[in-house]
Image (cartoon, rainbow, N blue to C red; front, side):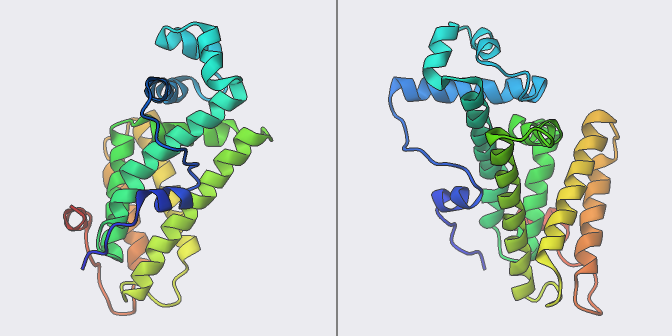
Length: 235
């Protein structure tokens, strides 16, 4: 049975995405369009290469006009991280939370995450690049990225814990360990697919997730819901 979809605002708050009042004004729509371009630019150049000046050039605005929207490079970087988190949450996490609880929900999350990488969605790309770019650069931008990663890990752990309650996984399975292992698989997938161009990267990622889930099953139970069937369950 599919649980009712949780309000998007609640879920995004859990993922560490700061929510602002919806903007219907022309200025609000302009800022949203600018942030979309900024996330795509950061995916190409990294957050360090993203400046108010480079973004102004990218979107064809004056530098002074761009400062009116963001004020500083740090404010721009923080806004880009929030926009990327919103994109990832909307395209990957929220669909999973609409799927039946347990293993189907895990697989819908995985399918969305794989699609994010295969389609080169900028939101996912920004988080992968920024993780290595900022890991030794203390400050508010690194703190924001760290908190978003921590909240993503907690969300994955909650999804897996739902599978324990449904009896799909052992009662002593560790949701936090699963969250860390799944994130490691997905980082490996991004590396194999995007940098190395491995044509079997997606297949291998699914096999690795299947192995993680099989290891968490109650004794005597074989493989449960496979990726394709689980993705259908979430539609």
